[in-house]
Image (cartoon, rainbow, N blue to C red; front, side):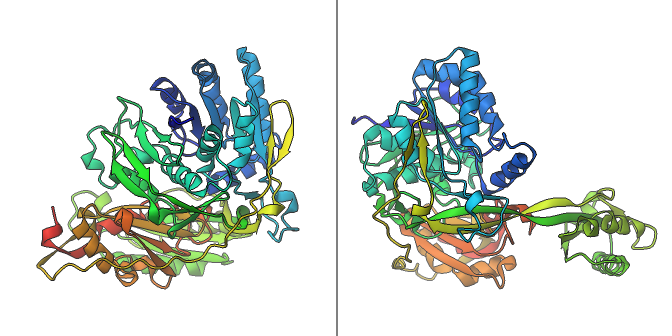
Length: 565
């Protein structure tokens, strides 16, 4: 087959637009429709669901979408691949078969399993987590599709794998076709987060004329691994070099982007506008995958509670100091962790009470729910008539809530029983890769020539630079890109690790690594430990670091006037 395969995506997370499956099936031609329903936090949520109901543990919204759209997919000959199986792909596959039977449809449903390592966690040195799931690759999906499956559901495969699998099956790629696989990984990375590729969460969103209801993306992947990112005609949003660059920078680290089947060299990707709402990705180089698989480990960390005091008007700092001292001294038993944060949202001489007020947050954590429940929040309320003038809080006293902790483990790929289960029940063990390569740092690319000295103006960094940020366990990445060569020459020399620390004081004392991606005119920072023990830990105001890049763009810096619009 030489024609491109058209792979559309209809979900970027568990909770994404429910109508997207129908929109993608009716909006234009597709060969495959994929969905990414899983994230680190989702696995924790599904783990708690499974504790309540052993037959659960999968994304129920996927079934709702299929009830509306499975017949349409069959009529159009579109095959569906989704990781909605979560912790129970076999259970979801059975549920899809039952649904097809009720709808009177003849549908072959296969699934991929083996990622769930919970029963072997101690044996594999992974501790005693609530969930333990290895990130599988695409070859189980390939085997299921080659067996004739119309619908393939998986557990914890990598986000890109639901796209790589259809491409590899369609073209008959071999496991060592690394450049082709890497190209598909990059295309998959772009579209797996749905409308983030078509203008959602885009730094320069004001330049997109129709962002009210952006269309979901699709990738036209060619036999050689090159691709075109686009969307159905007439849908909202935009596909541009900027929107694709932003998504390429999302939740990556260095130039080597490791997947279970291939390590994609992000620094080799080349982007070109291929017409309206069409961006071509070419030149992606692939290397053998690492010998180990990453494992998503979620555990119950304990119990968490928060009490927020409203401080209004004058003497904000002194009011905060007083109530902080009072609450700390009043607690009969101190929680294991107690953190204070004063959010100065107040303005001088404000014309509304809300804009004259600041918020003082007290967050507590402890393994014992009693220490962070009413004993804590009730003590805060008891201070109401004895503390600072204007005392009030944002909520009544309440009990603490369970919080989760995410950690990443690694196990040899050969220890994971990656298995394709065909529609008729045949089980096929997917062999681990025999050609592997340990991840290693890449050679730092040469810096471009610096710009000659010129007049500068202090202005927000975001006037010239876009950004995309996100979470990876307890770490966060912030990728920034610019649109001209002169801007790149300035950015590469100016935005150092030291400058980042200056602009983002919250990074002080944390390990920060900078990676240059000249092909994208981009620089990526990985900030370790800024999110504490993962998203569910809620270590900071923005627990998933989604706004970290926008905060950075808002900071003022000396920019050469010639670079400013």
